[in-house]
Length: 210
Image (cartoon, rainbow, N blue to C red; front, side, top):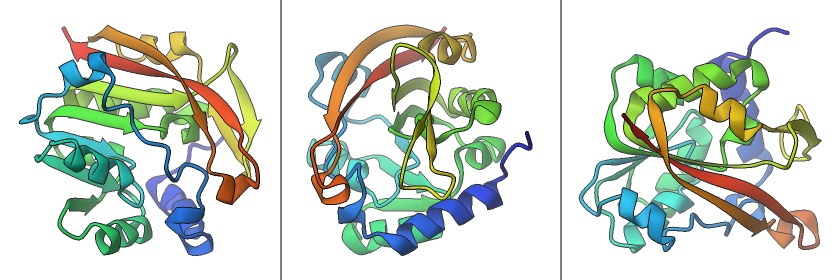
């Protein structure tokens, strides 16, 4: 199978933001558990934090509201970032893919990758996780997953699927980062998108370079 490129992914996500407003998307209102004690202890209020795949900017705004001030949101979709700047203009947003930022030498204290990883294809997973590892000494990554690795239908993207990556596979791709936190979470999909409440589970890992 051919690995997707930044241009491919940009076209996918631009089409998503063309089709739906941020408030209509399934993850709207699904906030990062910033009050989780273990996560809070890994992200200092003065840390430089990069939110990868920030989309329309909700997690960036949430961190600002929680007292974090040195936060940057990045997304490869210019249309997603346009929504973020329109909604939260006083925050900092940049257009750029995770792999592209890593390749250009970006480095921050903390990388927060929230509800993005299950959109990454299995063929691209190792490269994506390697980019996260390059971007930050501390990486918080949370994604939807089940008991087994599988491909799950999704009505958001044109390809119609998301990928429940196995925890063991994610950990093996980041050998220089040790697990400092592992937290299981359960979220309710935005009813405005699905028409009913759908609960899905996932895992949030806190990793630090050793």
